[in-house]
Length: 43
Length: 256
Image (cartoon, rainbow over all chains, first blue to last red):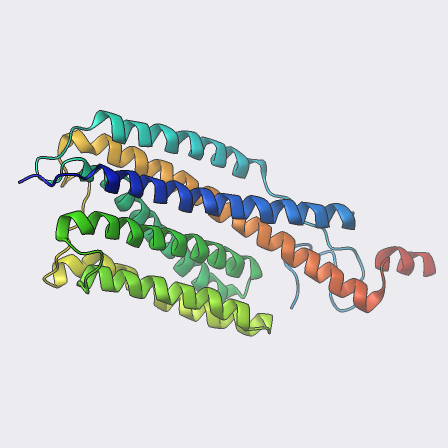
């Protein structure tokens, strides 16, 4: 028997994936920008 | 602790200025290729595979859940190898690589658990159950959250390196237990999914997403590692300035 009404779960799964991976990329990007400013101040 | 960033700088006297390391250009390239591959792989998985006979469209969660788990395992393998490197060579770079891989691995493990939970609710009727696979994965996540917490609280660098290397190796030993848990114990979770065990319609989507997330994994670990190296170099430079003054090298040469 096929499981029905699954679309909301699929959408939620992909939304979570993009949020987590995108969130981590954004965290690295912000950290890199902050460090770049510190390096520029040093050099 | 002696820096590995620039051996021309003498930590005992402060002579020579520490160079700030730069991220190699391939890291950004891998990131761009990884994002493009990820978008393409998601489109291939979602748009080209037919609904599963039993699970319907829920099967499409496999394209993110399984590759996230595989790549988390790869990240923890990097942690284990780099941690062994720390214990053998005492090299700060191996420690920073292990920490970067642990952070990315923990993120992917958390993602794996969340996706599994979303899949489990309509399939099993529960968001969570204390099944051997789920529990061992949760233990894996807790160990590496502990690893990252330990690094924050251990202040002495030499001790932090050794302690976290030990925890990293012990934590990575849990990976084969997680992988084999579905065979060693009677679990609600199905046996391992792989291109050999899934329907041929789903192989391309699974492989494409696994490779795309692998590229993102490499990008995340490499960028995180280089950020840590820059942070360490800045901290060491600030420490030298506090000890020897702002223009160490120039002053010494001018006075000679």
